[in-house]
Image 1 (cartoon, rainbow, N blue to C red):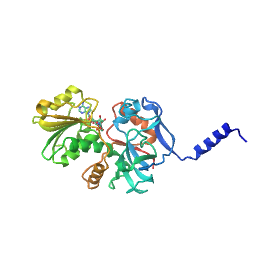
Image 2 (image 1 turned 120 degrees about the vertical axis):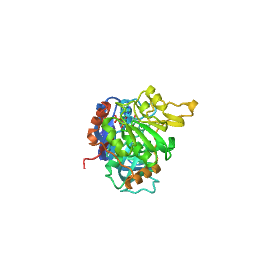
Image 3 (image 1 turned 135 degrees about the horizontal axis):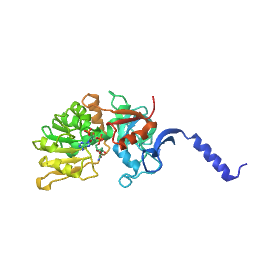
Image 4 (image 1 turned 180 degrees about the vertical axis):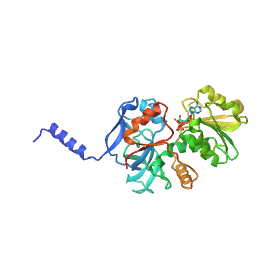
Length: 335
Ligand SMILES: NC(=O)c1ccc[n+]([C@@H]2O[C@H](COP(=O)([O-])OP(=O)(O)OC[C@H]3O[C@@H](n4cnc5c(N)ncnc54)[C@H](OP(=O)(O)O)[C@@H]3O)[C@@H](O)[C@H]2O)c1
């Protein structure tokens, strides 16, 4: 008979090996993209109000790089090791206590909380109330490209800017992932859309429905826009002086909305110009509306690249080098 310390070790080992495991990408310390490890992790078990989702895909969002690097320890504290991935598309695989209105086998999408383990894994836990039915008209994995950036565009335009038919909106940085949705949604709302985009993304922005596209790399935006706009939406990493110059294009009583929250959006109280720093939040009802538009053919989901989970570190490296081409979907399985 083993003495108790050895017996304890043996039993602990036996119990651990029986726990189902999954593949996930985690980081155990903050740092460069090479801190990301593709490794075996215990499958999560859903608690009250949660479901477990078999992940089809997550995506890369810019904030993932900042969390990994340790820059977000104040606003978004995580416990290490941590699994990234706040977008999810997948199939419900288990229900926690008290969950109603969802069933095993449902295909869903969602925007998950930042501070708990995310969807860069084969399975993830999701608050049941954060999920919306997945679109049926596009592949499930591509639908991961919708939640965070689609909700950001929706909340910028309709919650914060209160965009109305006939409004003129200038979208700075329209060539990116949020911009693609913002241009489509603003156009569908009956606005006149002026978009800034470099040559690499001008075709994309035109296809999204922009009325005017200004190449910010060759053209001075402040002199090209000759009539005031009701709304300035900034999505681009411009400097504060440029942001203030663009905000001068907003009419008296208009609004500036910004997703680049590391610098405050410039208000002009003298002219009644409001400024809003947007922090996107999860909202299943808004997400369901976006999904309905996708399935009616009114909203296009753009996926720039699809990359296996095991290669997530290379996506972070491309983002850090500034060469990521738009929304990149991370596939949890190779099938
Ligand atoms: N606060 C929040 O809750 C929240 C939520 C989502 C996203 N964000 C942030 O919002 C920003 C936009 O997100 P995203 O996913 O759309 O990013 P993204 O895909 O990287 O797009 C940003 C776009 O900015 C453009 N750009 C770069 N330098 C520019 C310049 N000097 N002038 C004008 N345009 C320039 C680029 O356009 P070209 O293609 O034309 O070069 C790029 O496509 C990111 O900083 C992201 O982190 C914040």
